[in-house]
Image (cartoon, rainbow over all chains, first blue to last red; front, side):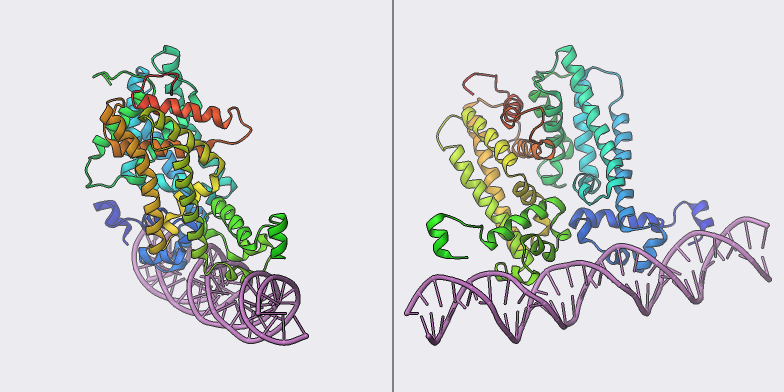
Length: 206
Length: 206
DNA sequence: CCAGTGCATGAACGATCATTCACTAGCGTA
DNA sequence: TACGCTAGTGAATGATCGTTCATGCACTGG
């Protein structure tokens, strides 16, 4: 692997570290962290088992790397997709579309970020949970803004926020590309369900 | 363990088989099937590791027993809580209340039934998936009935059914007894969210 | 050209995994 | 009382686990 080659012509092949992360992500999502061995990850990457430890200090460090990286990327993407200004109805629609489409485009990341919390040791767990809280907080802010303006039918902001996020995230459990509906069509159905659940009459401006 | 004693005075102590199932359920839910060892289950039950195999043929058989048993009990309880007759609005409310309250009362069963599908080998997987499909079918039937009568705002029955179930099931991820809201209060919030998402105006008859 | 560094190797470590098995204690039934 | 079955024991099986490490190659900057 010539470094000069990488500089001149771009990545000639993905770095081994990235390859390890990609393979581990896929395997963890498919079968769960405890069920995947470092040997199997190495095998799929095309190196021997010891080689992984040149890039990640431990299996746990690899998991933390994946989960924390995903959550940070998710937050950055969310803030780009739902700019700070705008009225609550617009922002709610943006949030739902973003959440559904992002989750459908990164199902593996999403799945392990929600399912492997229990495989994290305390230090990593605290960091990931904080990022998750921050994400959920974005939706609560939107609901609160709509509540203040009286445009949403709010019974209980925290409960409704958790309910909506669960509904949206669940799309990854059944959606498969190539099926009856496109991702965008599914996202629009979810937008309708969410806005209706908040008592928003349908408008073309949504 | 005298059998006559059990007949006369009720269960003097839970059968070992039941104890194994209970302990395994708790551990699987807490840390996941692959991360729990038969040794640990045996230890918590108070027997040696080999003893488990007098009651279950394998670790996999133990998992199948738990998941299939839960799904069958869930279906039976659902059909008791949502009798066949009745109008779609009533039945929808009954479904939501049942789902939320049952899930909050059996969080471990629910969790592994939804999360350990990937740990099942093909035979057990097929049986559990069929039961799951049957459960989801119950909700789809309610939505379809409401659609025919024109009392629900239906965009897409299958998608909405999956969205609603995901929303409801998600309650187990955040609800903790002793918190701000009772289980019943939470159930009512979910009923409101669900009925609103289907465009049902609020009525005291719900 | 040479020293240094990053990375992959392959063998080995001790620990733990699910499962098997010969054995036995204790019970209900005959 | 004698028999047979249920259930628990404790040791052993081979496999696999995460991790370590001495070794060496390929490439870098000086």
